[in-house]
Amino acid sequence: CISMGMIFDGQINNEHNAYKNINQDISWLGSSKFYNAEDNETWVLQFSPQASLKMFDLSDKLLEARCNDVVKNIIKGKYIIMHCGIFKWKFALCKRSNLEKKFLSISENAFAIGGWNISPRVESAYISGNELGKYLTEVQL
Image (cartoon, rainbow, N blue to C red; front, top):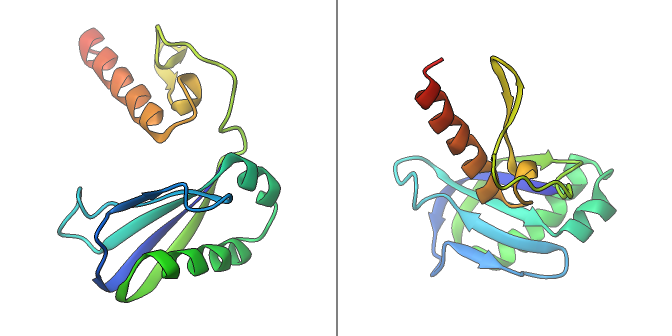
């Protein structure tokens, strides 16, 4: 799994704050402005699993260049990309699924969370962490 996070400066003039199935390499592109209206505009671009596997060993600079071309064709306005960062997960599509317990207890005080324990989606990573938070407040460690 490869994603690129970007911080923008300037004016974005888009009708939508998320785009899906952009092309065979890009699964989605979304803004966080809805959630943090006071901060700089930030967007995340997600490569497809097939493209991620194919391009996993490419340099961050090369991946950024591929992303920038796509972004400039979708996000309209007068802006610059102030910063971007590439994020890679080598085991993002694990086959494991444990829906009864959405986190893993490693020891009495150590736990593992993440989408890998539920499904290969960013929402699953959030759910996993949220469930651990509920558990910890219930047992009051």
